[in-house]
Length: 273
Image 1 (cartoon, helix red, strand yellow):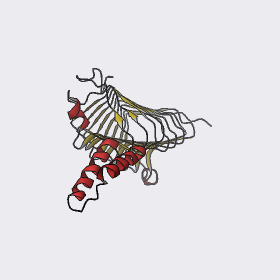
Image 2: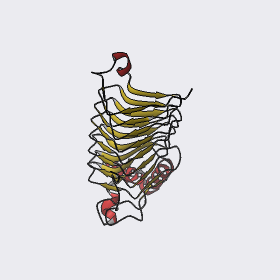
Image 3: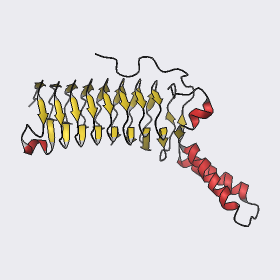
Image 4: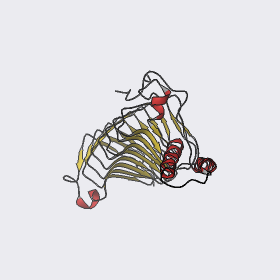
């Protein structure tokens, strides 16, 4: 049976609703619940909003201090728009082939802003993803489309852990992240990250903001050269170095960031009311 509902202008937290519900989910949408969750304060739950096999609209809410602010599973396709999502362990979690539209949100000061995993293909656009203590966006066996976001002042802007399918990261402003704009160390395909603004104009500066197979290859070669300074050489260094570089190239992909924008992308970030 299809269940549709609208929750409007309420204060939804573990202090004001039943403990047996909020020990799991502040708001639970299951089995084709396609209603609206609007202008609520959802806080201090294990899952602020949990969506399973449903397509609700989650709009203009304040979702704070939950273990997961919003989690989507089981082939769900919610629209998550114009929310403030802060101080959660994970702001938005997408997995199990769920494909949410994540649009025009402020996703700030979580541990991880958006986590994409388990074959999830979300659309992530026009968000401000800032000041998250681990990663702005974390991708693990998923294939998101990431465009026209502001991704800044996170420890790592976008962290890529494992390959699944090709995905797109374009026309974003990815600037002032503490360690790397993009960090990828277990990926076997090339990542399309063209046409982003990196906060720099020179290619050699931008390349240092990205950690990928090239970075790891350089590290291994430097370590090998340092070792060779302390051992007797038989003259095989060049051949071994080339073999090592080829092996790493097979195992690790690269981030394709050329061409890139030399000015901030106009219209990126929150654009709706």
